[in-house]
Structures are given as C-alpha cells and as structure tokens.
Image (cartoon, rainbow, N blue to C red; front, top):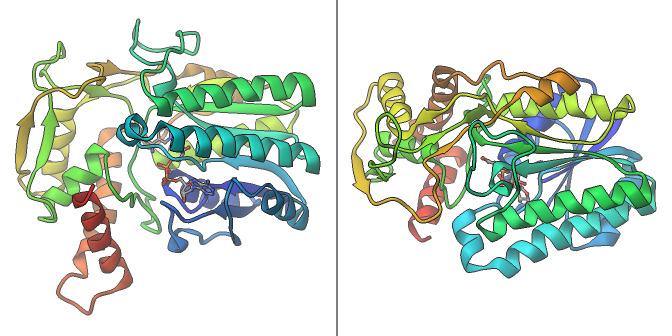
Length: 348
Ligand SMILES: NC(=O)c1ccc[n+]([C@@H]2O[C@H](COP(=O)([O-])OP(=O)(O)OC[C@H]3O[C@@H](n4cnc5c(N)ncnc54)[C@H](O)[C@@H]3O)[C@@H](O)[C@H]2O)c1
C-alpha cells in the first residue's frame, strides 16, 4: 500500500482527503501539530504529531513510512489573523513549506499536492476567475500561498519536483456519512457560524454588507463540498503518480451563491429561523468570487458531484446538529468539543 504523507491531515479538508485516500487503497500518514486540527479526525491511518518547523521529524516520518508523495494541507489560514500577525503566516506557511520541500528532496520524494487558495488572486478583475487571472493577494495569508506556489515552480526547475497547486474557493459541507466535519476554533466561515446560530449556540449570524452590486445585495461566493475537494486530491495525486505534468488549477463549481441564499437554505433545511444581524461590509471583501472550474476536469478528470447548495447545507447541518444533540445527556467528547469551539470563537 503506497504511503502518502498528509500534512495537516487532522484538519477539516485534510481529514476528508485521508478518508478518500484510504478508500482508494493508499495509506494516509498524518503529520500534524494539532494546533487547529483534532486527534478524533485522524481515523484512516497513523498520526505522527509533529511541526513543519522540525525538518528532522519530517525526514524521519518520510523514511519510516517510505512516503511516495505528499498532500500538503498544513497552514494557518485565517485572513483576519494574517492582517494582525503576518510573521506567524510567513513563518508557518512559507518557512514550514521550505522545510517540507527540503526534507522531500533529501528523502527522494518527488510529488506534492498543495492546498492553495482563491485568496492568491486578490480582487477579481474579471469573472469567473480562471487560472490566468493575475495573482495580486490583498492579505498576508494569500501572499504566503502565492509564495509557496512560486517555490514549487523553482523546485521543479532545480529538483524535478512534480506538483499541483489546487486553488480552492469556499470549502463547505461535511462527510455525507457523518464521520467528520468542520470544527474550527475560532470559526470564521459562514455556514458553520449560521448553524451554530440556528442551534442557539450563538446569539445571531452577522451578514456583512447588504448593498453589494449583486442580485440581492449580499456577497456571492463559490461553495465547494469538502468531499469534492478530497476527491480532487485523490484524482490529482493519481495524475502525478502516472507521470502527469505540474499544474495550478481552481477547485470550484463555476456557480455563485449569495449569503442571503445560503442563509435561506439553512433555514429551510434546519427548519429553524435564523437570528440575522446586518452589519457593514468588511474591508477587502469583494462582491463576488466565482471560479472558472474546467481545467481540473480537462487535465485530471475531476468535477464536483456533491457541491449543490442543498447537499452542502444538509451534510453540514447533520454534522453540526449531531454535535449539539448530546446537550442535556452526559457530556460527550463531541459536545465538549462544540462548547470549546464556541468559547474559542467568543474569545477571538
Ligand atoms: N477551508 C477553506 O475554505 C480553504 C479555502 C482555501 C484554501 N484552504 C487551505 O486548505 C488547507 C486546509 O484548510 P482547513 O480549512 O482544513 O484548515 P485546518 O486549520 O482545519 O487544517 C490545517 C491543519 O494543519 C495543521 N497545522 C498547521 N500548522 C502546522 C504546522 N506548522 N505543523 C504541523 N501541522 C500544522 C493544523 O493543526 C490543522 O490540522 C490550508 O492550507 C488552507 O490554507 C482552505
């Protein structure tokens, strides 16, 4: 069984990718410092608790498992935090990836799939956004991912690395079998925040901006189901292992949904009215972000299958409702997790 190193495999997207890898016959070996990830999310292979800053630990794990390729999810990824602490972002994301690439070169591991982001494009100059759109990030988080993409380019020139940079749009939803789901602390994403409001775990859900030049005045985003992202990593990895060429490509659906549409869908699926609070636009939030998604299909045959809004919202709702359901019974670890997440968010 080929071993695949999954940095950040205890996190939201990485844990779903581990499930997809295991289903395809790979052994996912998770390398994670559990700074934002969870031990309970590592279910399909070993957890090697470690830091990207520890190059010797990276080399040790690659040699121990005879790793064939790397899926690189580990990063700090909160845009607002990156505007306050850019050093953390450059040190962890860029410095950490430098260590990873050096360890890969030392151990003869020549294939890598990077979690990149639509934040590397900055403000859209045209819609939908295709891969030739200029990359001019407007926050340190996006800048670190762009810097990493450039590192991959030079590692290929010098060390013959083959890579994919998958630029996700808005990851959303949860494992349709309910085994794993989103659990960030602090939470900053619309769907989990709205679900916590629907469950009475927070007083309201903020809608930032109702005066955008969009059909209903709220911001439009391209939501992609986390299981579709996981499947893209599996298909992209196959492409690289078959000798396919390096590539940067979008992972999105090509369709946008407004904040108001998402909230209406949550109300319909949960059967609960949402306490909505209208707030001014946030600096740096563009009115619309929508991917041109076809390159991934042309090159490695991937297309989204579970990213319609109803599937995204219903899988996320099942996950969040299950977390909260244990309230009143003996506090389970999942319930304690939910309380912890809310406290983390409140103190942010
Ligand atoms: N969630 C999204 O909407 C989205 C969109 C675009 C791109 N991305 C990218 O996808 C990746 C995964 O995002 P996510 O939402 O699953 O985040 P996440 O925070 O849930 O997962 C990141 C994981 O990396 C680990 N990690 C962070 N720094 C580390 C370090 N120095 N050493 C070892 N482990 C470390 C964390 O503990 C965590 O398990 C990130 O690279 C992110 O930038 C996410």
